[in-house]
Length: 502
Image (cartoon, rainbow, N blue to C red; front, side):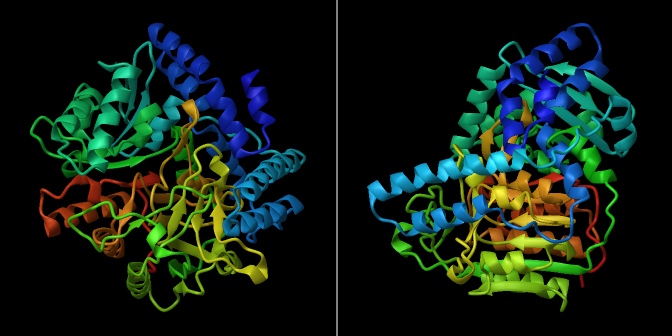
């Protein structure tokens, strides 16, 4: 019955909501299979729910046309309403616009429902996953529930279900304490050691594997695993390349998908957007020791104002030099939503966006990257999740150098409804996103090091890990995790970017 509901879902958002509402059914059935000693069945149950919308819509994006689809009347009306909303100062008017916006979004969902829906993707079997994994990889699929928590650990040669020592309530408390301390730039060593003990210590194969692929659950979706500390008080970053995936099925789809066309252009960079809002009402300085530091990201769409991000011009220009003369750089007044959409997006191997972001936890499809607006083309400047999923991407890597692009509404066993997930659905093979704010002091150093390692033909996961290690060497081993641990990699981390980097 659940599969029937999911097959008939009109959009990724609708599918995620169904899985979230029914998550307890999947978790209880998983626990039953574990008690019966049937690992293959337990794994299959998880894969029916995990990353379900991403997996199903990935199949659609693999056969998508190379041009973005035409806007529907509802899409145009949503843009018009948001343009009014961004310029309205009347509380009464704003309430009416928001009500109209909600109604139009529901109309759009009905229009999507009338279109062809994606066919369910083949869910990978445990034996298939073991053949897919490299000899140095270990996939860790976590299950967090009130009745008990588990880790299903899978390598090429072995699989096991490990019962964790803590249930949902304890894990939620431990993760919340850790994140509160990290984002407050307070001492976090004790919390990091406790989480390492719970999540890693009881899994024997971890010690022999370089690459860990984490499929998180519940509060673990918000946790940077590479910042956890082992019994020797060393970050997991020092001993492992850690990446993430919505599910094993999504990982398989990303690694094995046959792409009919090869992207010909090396790099598309977007930054130094011409934000025209009042700087005093925008992104707040979160580090009193660096009074000129600017945090990227705005958390409220209604009445939001956006500060200039002057450091992003240098960031984009340096990346352009790394990728060579065929790079396309959109900066200043050219970094608009209309200009971005006008590019042949399917032709770029790497896309990098250094911009503000807007989070909308209650309505995830409104979450957006903030580019320049273009009144002539009736673009509001908000590249929203609903628009991102329809983009015809063919990128080997998308980097979202903006705040909170890896977080969003937790949708039960489906995972996080985030901007990062939208780019995977659109066709990106790998996405680098953030779990909290990116700043203009340490982020450029990390980003530059990441791309320099890519230019040395390192795989994407190794390049991000080595970039973080470079930052720790440059600024000191005691540098707080807030400044480096927030960047995470989702998707296929073991592949390299095609050899077009100069």
